[in-house]
Image (cartoon, rainbow, N blue to C red; front, side):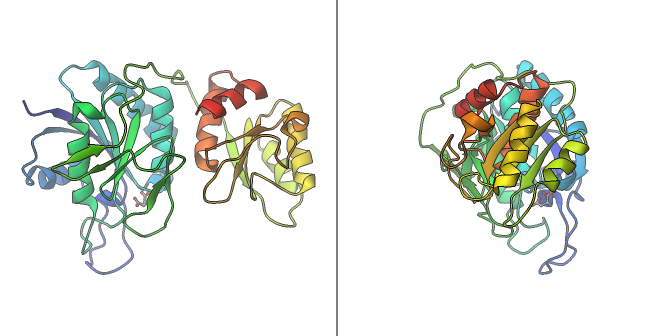
Length: 327
Ligand code: ASP
């Protein structure tokens, strides 16, 4: 039987048009989901695709409204036995944030696959149809279940907790850390490198009523503590440091962050460096300052996890650290 797949459209470059096959400028989210699905159906894939438009935006504009609608639609489809899997079409700029947020708050049930494109739909060498066909292959395969939310780009499958956009323009712009790709996929083949490890696990965190304001502060040489004060002044409920090296910042900034932590605003130290672990008590004394080390999560994902934790009432540094240790 052909798998029935719910396709939730949000926009992005995969639905973008340039009106020039070779130009650089384009607008995201312009092609209607139905039009995209007609093109995918014309590929003759073994799947029934059911469209539902959530938004038609560039993912730089995604936020609570779209996330809330996506979460509700996926949770409903998880409970609907007629659906084998779910695809979310999404811009690539914030794919890692949406994927990780959904991953933290959904059970590890049916396949949930985020797919985007680096080139607009009418560009020469556009990657959108290929990525979409791969997403259909993934979402329709029972082997994809129990792995959490997946992101597929350039014939490569990543887990939401690992994936990040690592290049501004190449079609293989995505990387995984600490795990690299989980699988290679083509419209005709799917090769996993490890078994599913979360089969049947419930959602790790409840879907909240709202997400708190949490900001990322990028450290720079010679900066002072004023930006920390400014962020606290606008009511941030948590802060993520995108620090130098292993999550470092000038002494005055660490002191201001320690003061914020002591005043009940949780602070997570991540790295502005492209990749790598941020461990506790290496150069910054987390035990003394009350800060949390982001471990394998980069700033964008650290912010998502911190927002989810605070929204679920977890504000104690030790418990936040446990969550970052466990991802
Ligand atoms: N700005 C676009 C977006 O994230 C880029 C893309 O989709 O590749 O929606």
